[in-house]
Image 1 (tube, rainbow, N blue to C red):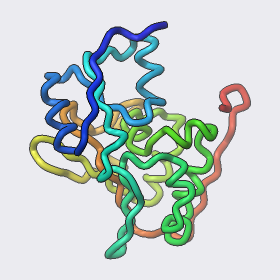
Image 2 (tube, rainbow, N blue to C red):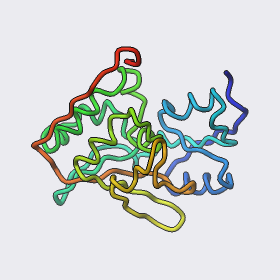
Image 3 (cartoon, one colour):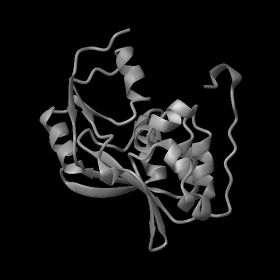
Length: 190
């Protein structure tokens, strides 16, 4: 199916993305990789009037380490999470988890933030983020807030993310003694 008509805008910063999102009056959606949103739009299960592209916002990308905390920007693609030397050394369960996501196309375009916002129960990140006691960093017109992963994921496809907020990062302490095992279903394997 073909998605409903929509306007496209590209944000240059988090503040710009928030301003563009506010201008839509709640009818806009953020997009980076599009692997979660676009299929819903094609099925017309999600019909935003405006798509705001946040894929090229530098502050949302990358893996950083400091003061005993690891931070992954929400715009970081799965491949970069999987191949991060910081994660490999300090919290290998995170990079190991990212390496199991989808196929190379999905890993090269899909983002951490998109996966979290979609909250698919079959996704790889939620269980791992619960295990490492991660904090999801959010920013909106009222400022920033941190939500524990256990509180962020509320139900199937439901998270503690307001319509006027953006996921900016995920933070957690290094965890060296952990592992991630994935149960594959042949019928749904990418």
